[in-house]
Image (tube, rainbow, N blue to C red; front, side):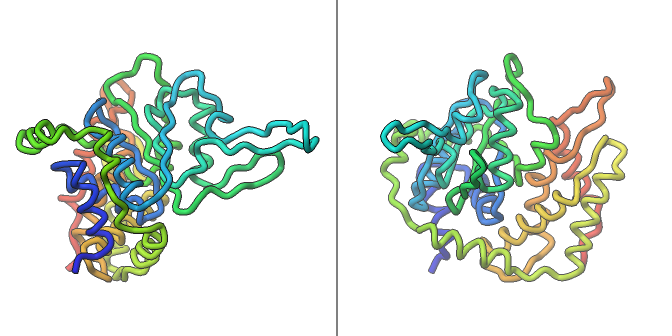
Length: 309
């Protein structure tokens, strides 16, 4: 009998065709209680993936289109005076949903970006001297186009570090793109998906993933990989301790989805590129950073670091 995680993965894959690895990474991020950044060109299924995940789990979903004039209150909410009661009432913003798609996050100003990222990190909103918790589970999927820079505000490294994983969906292969054409798969197709799990199942998946056993040698392996990013001559800045923690949690989630209650080196190697590539800064000849090479360098480090036996 397939596990809950495999059932969810299979359901999403009915709509997100030919991207089983991407669907799995999104689930690993969710089960690690992190947030996901998708960098890719328009039209490859970023919104479809987010909505399909929410519908498969029976969770509330909200898409926020980020623009240069978007204000923090447009995301978090605002207090409005009620003349009948003579008091201010808080009107929750679109962030008060289980799955939030922050579309083209780099098109909003740093102030608005910071408001979203603070809520992601604290999982609560503080306004009018009151703290309001966000729904649980709470999962943000942010998107940005890495090839379009006009009129954008790139996320600084300190804010990129708040995302547990960064992935790219990429174009489908010819076979699956033919399926998408013939079956007319688009965003409206997601409405046909039926929930195959509940939010309580997500909580259980998170608890089970966190309980995956990690041998001390694998903790040493994780630290060796992170240490290599700090010593690499090709990197200006390596991964932080938060990156090491994120890699451990994502690897545990990977083991859980594979049906194991213990960690193996392949779980770490499978999660590392998506977890670490946006947490490092690549040296370049002109003195600036070159994020395009970061994943390649992380993969080279994985090949170089000795795997515990």
